[in-house]
Amino acid sequence: GTTTILVTHDQDEALALADQIVVLHDGHVEAATDPQTLYHDPPTIAAAISIGEANILPADIHADRAHCALGAIAIHTNGAPVSNSPSQLLLRPEQLILHTQPRTRETAATVVDSQYHGHDALVHLALNQPDHQILLARVSGSLPLATGQTVWIEVRGPGKTWP
Image (cartoon, rainbow, N blue to C red; front, side):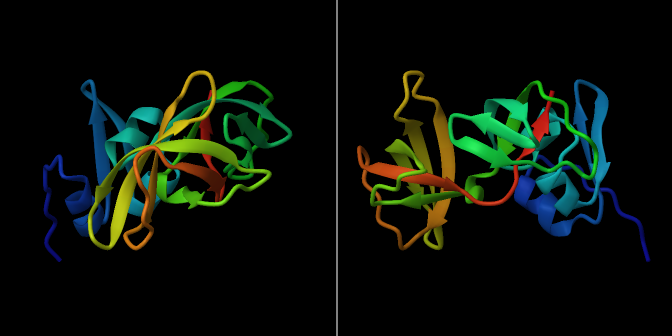
């Protein structure tokens, strides 16, 4: 029944221990909510990148989908109408599913680097498109990927957008 305030920059510690997380950015409160909401539905880009790895892609919103380098992605709308406009799209690394064989509707990318952690790996990918945008994917540690290997990216679950 005791209230405790823990000040930390350790994202894993904050997510594991907190009932509520407050994110400060430039001296202002960016977010104050429970860990699950903060991770999956952050109110701002600053809050999103403060609490875990994040892929932020430019996107155009049309018909409740974000159209970006990875295709047309479903988005969180929280029941609110979404205007057709340029936006920023958040996809967490675990939403990017990698395939080692060509897939017709998925986007090709090249493995740039992989950080192996045993149970999983954080893979850095360069999209096989003119700007070679770098994305992060979290994959099973048993999926062997080599630097320079081509993979195809499937997106699972909705993304979060901001104007």
